[in-house]
Length: 414
Image (cartoon, rainbow, N blue to C red; front, side, top):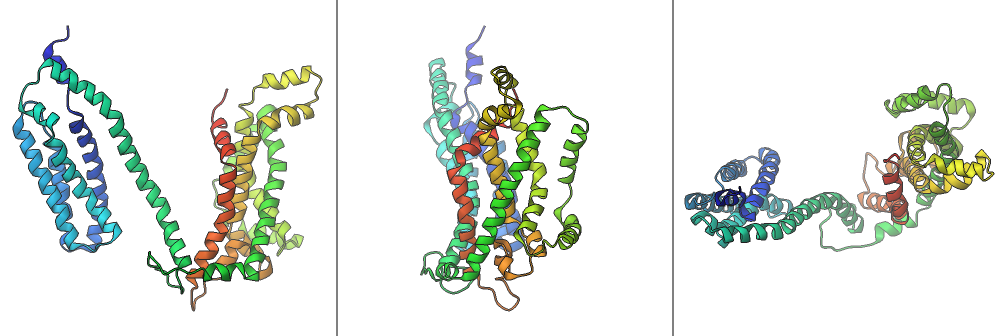
């Protein structure tokens, strides 16, 4: 039988439970931020340690049922935490990063003052609530829990978005700022001279053409080899199958630099140095194991019953593959093609080793050649970097539907 005391023990205001979770996150973040204070030294480190201690004490002294003293202690610690955060603002530079740092002290302190002094928490800590009040509180918790969880999740995701976008914003600012200073200042003045210079450069378009030829060639040749290989590993049992699959995985364990000298000797012997074909062959060999395994994983999810039905309808094995299996596998083929294209588009070491002529440079090697020991044209380099990333961004934008389908379907069997 459920008694009134049992029902009361179930109820804790949503403000208290949420504050406990968020204080744990704030404590962990402030532990990481102490490394910044250690590097800076001074009064910021002492205040950071004090703020961390206040958060720890606040976690252990959160309000409790029918205990108004615990509520007063929490309010006192929350006010102290807020004060420490505001004082730290005085002793730190007024930059966006420092404001974000202090927000992890000011925010929990202000939130503690607001929530602990709220009416539901005050009523819960000041007296034993009636059964009807507890029922109302439980219903209120259920109504607000989803909103608070959603807010917390979005707050965490916004931090990851900021970490992703900040480097891009910095590069864009350098590319649009006049001169070649590495540290641009947000807010202008801005100019398009760097983009105009790169778009008007004959070398840039030569590097672009070489990268497109090599990347598209690698993608097409890789698919021609990887699609039938992945299908064979998925559908047929033959001697050496398991050993071959293990060998494909094994070669991925070693860094690419160990095959640099053998590759160079082979390419020199075959006369493929300073040629598109040499790079295409080298990239295909490097990317083939990953492509085969990705396609095999997707082919395993295609029901064999579809192939058996096609055979009963009079199709031969080649027609079954081309008319039944391959159309169903287009999402996986799109994913594999994109990964092959990216691997060839971004590769630097082999392109630098095999190509010694500026007319055969790919974009990564061409961009690296812009940085010299005497002077760095950071504005031109940033503009070129953004232009190089544009084709890849467009590919992801146009093929995102196939990417989602291919990545999700290939990971489930049956």
